[in-house]
Image 1 (cartoon, rainbow, N blue to C red):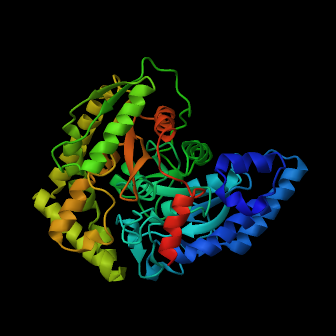
Image 2 (tube, helix red, strand yellow):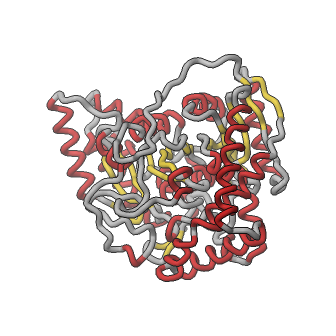
Image 3 (cartoon, rainbow, N blue to C red):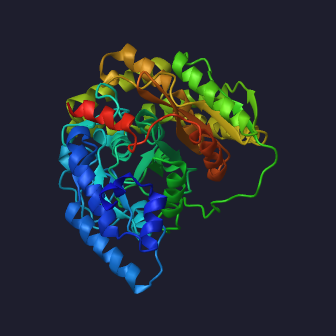
Length: 481
């Protein structure tokens, strides 16, 4: 049995360790063996922390035997992302110039995971500077989608999602300012939660620099896992208070019971036509919610299209100016081309990047946020696509400006939600041509519990296999060959 612990959920693993049925060393050793077998094929982990992980597991076992209080993730194998500070490791962000940028202090969200008892088995890969939906960089190489090597595992948390999907850790830490948790989760057939900003304490970048306004308002840290229950467990661990984030909100993780359950369905806002398979997945998920007792209604919300456009104007068009200079100086060829094409599309969408447009854009953001908040008083859940397209082919964003525009247009559901600052859950629904297809669930601020409840309804009926099943193992073995 211990040789197969890597297949267990985080909830199962944590319970078994807490009750003495297995040791943390057994759980970690099983996961490290799985990493040794699979990571050379998938390249999801840029660093494997075998020695540190086994030492931490032994400490966890000693603590359990002492009778001391244990955290919710005590002894459980977890991965962290290479763009977040972790004491003793380099925060490379996939950039060669940062290969020696070793830090001494954990970022708040990493500190919370460590305090919850998580054992860090590896650091997951990202694209250079974490700004593509494709995980590849010159320093650590390309991460492959475990389902199909010709399709992206998503980005920027592509390594996190691919590692989790293929059994290299029970829970992965990810972050999201434009879909970087939700899209990789969908591409790899797992569950990913973008919490409400302020829910999980964080800080992105060196402590002695100012975080960009858009990053302060929109960037979040969250969990990726193979089940909704594991995502909830990861959220509870990550959301502990930490005074180093001035935006942290000590909101309860469980809200008051709500009235009759109503779900709105938003398919299209006039930005990009849905792929038929994506449209069918929306219909299927809506049907499952209806069967579970939700009143389901198709709606129109043009504010999502406006929010999507404003994300590109304010974040990409204005705030990434300094990042653009860093990319030009330290980036690899792929990130330079992707960034150039992103900005070219942004210029097609907007002609005004002035200070006045910037100020008015953020003013408009508040109006749109209010409108969505009022809408969600009538609907507990809003069901949308993750992307208008199925999982992108590898490097779709560096082909030419027209393909980049299609890629950007397809991602409107995730960009809009990030801009408006509401929580979103990515949950798989089905397989299409051998690839997972997921949906996004949107809810009221700080009501992640309501999203997780709806996610469980979909999870209970989806037909996307886990790493335990022969179907997934066959896909991974095909990739190996």
